[in-house]
Length: 128
Length: 128
Image 1 (cartoon, rainbow over the protein chains, first blue to last red):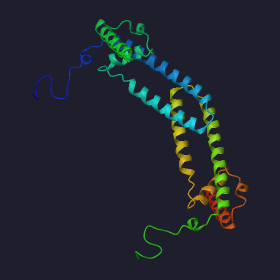
Image 2 (cartoon, rainbow over the protein chains, first blue to last red; image 1 turned 120 degrees about the vertical axis):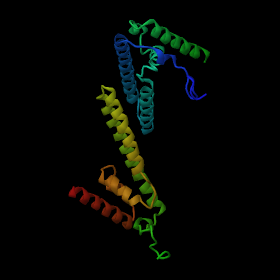
Image 3 (tube, chains in turn purple, green; image 1 turned 60 degrees about the horizontal axis):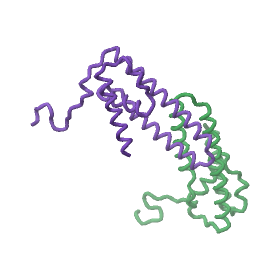
């Protein structure tokens, strides 16, 4: 079955089927950038508090490790491709960086998808 | 010439010929540890000053890079093997982390070697 619509190694990604209007793209981009700014500012505040408590070299190298980890986490998380954007926005809502109201103006198809991913993330958390 | 005293890949290392008495080892170890402590405390103070000036994420990641670089520099520099210790001590004197008087009590063979390396480092600096 090499030529069917579900070839080996592929799977159906409903996010990739969404059509984003220019107005929706502007709303999504603005919400995404605001969340990124918020998370970065929070990381800076956190880093300053951690630095203030440091008295040994071992503490300092732990802070370096922590900074590297935060940098990789943020780099990984903030992925603006439209084919994954609904899960990215859902995660930002779930983690508290993005107020859901910042997405006002997106079509119902996008909002429903984002909300369903947020619900899935919440139920995963509740099971832990 | 595969079996002579200067086989291919080897070279004569005068530092490896030194004999360190227990008293000399104690003096060298104490001086080395004091220099390491001084350099680490200075790095912590420097890091705190750099952190205090940070306002953007780009600054924060620059600080992370700087911390990683300092950690590697310090790891590379502080090598307590006796076969390299005179150059290590010379470098610490040259960079201001180790007062030469901390080496009082070492034999003249070690002190002469350390001083000659310090002189070499100074003359390299002067040529730049």
